[in-house]
Length: 338
Image (cartoon, rainbow, N blue to C red; front, top):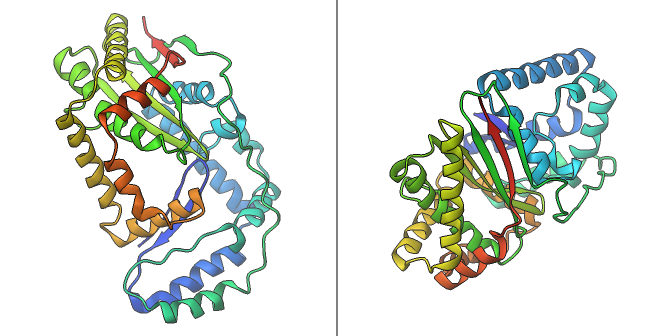
C-alpha cells in the first residue's frame, strides 16, 4: 500500500512493503525524489482536479468558506493562513515553471527525513539508503518560511450573515503556546477535559445537558511554531447559538477558577495516553509519527520523556495555564442565518 498526506507545512509519502522489498521501495522513493516526470499536460490536469475538489468541498460543506475566513482571523500572516488545497485563483494562475521550481527546491535529500519501521536489518538498510540517495544532488535553496509570533489580529470579533448555511454557527479560537513550550503539555490535557469524548465538559453541557448545540468539534491545531485552540459549534437557531456561546464561556471560566477534580483529570490523561500509544500500534503509523516529530522538532531524542510530561500535569498547572491562555483575547466568528 502507498499513500501521501499533505498538511500546511509538510508532505509525507508512506509505503508498506514486505521486508524483503526494502531495496525496491528505497529505489522507488529515490527515483521519485530525483527524476519525477511531469509535463504541462499533467500540471494542467492536476490543477483542474484540485479546483474540482475545492468546488466539491464547498458544495458538501456549507461552512467551508467561513472556516477559511476564520483561519485568516487567527493567522494574520499570509504564510500561515493559506488553505492546504490552495485557492482557486492561485491554482488557475500557477504555471509549469512554478511547479518545477517548487519541486526542485523542496523535494531533495537535504530537505527530507527518511523513516523506516518494521522488520529490517539496520546493517543492511544503511548501505541501501546511501546507494540510492547519496547520488541525488542538493536542491535549490529552500525559501525561508516566514517565522512569526502571534501578532495582534486585525479583527477579533466578526459576524457574517450567511443565508446559504442551513443553521447558525460560530468559530472560537485562542492563540496559545508554541508546541515547543512546556505549557503545551497542560494545554493538551485541557483540550481533552473540554472537548474530547462524550463525557467532556463542553460536549456534556452543549449537546447532552442543555442541548443548545447540534454539532461541536475542535481542538489544538499546530502550524509550524504556532498553535491555536479552535472550537466550532453549530446550533438550530441564532438564539440557541448565543446560548451555546454563553455556556462555552461559562465552562472556560470554570476551568480558570476551579481546580479540576483528580478523577476527571485522570480520565483525560488516560484518554490521551491511549491515543498517544496508538500512534505506535501499526508500523505505518509509527513511521509517520516519528517522521513528523523529526520534521517539527529536528530531533526525536526526547520522545521517551514526552508521555511522562503529559501524565505529570496537575490540577494546579491546569488552572494556571487556563488563566494564562484562555483569556479575554479570544477570536470569534459568528455565522448567523435568517
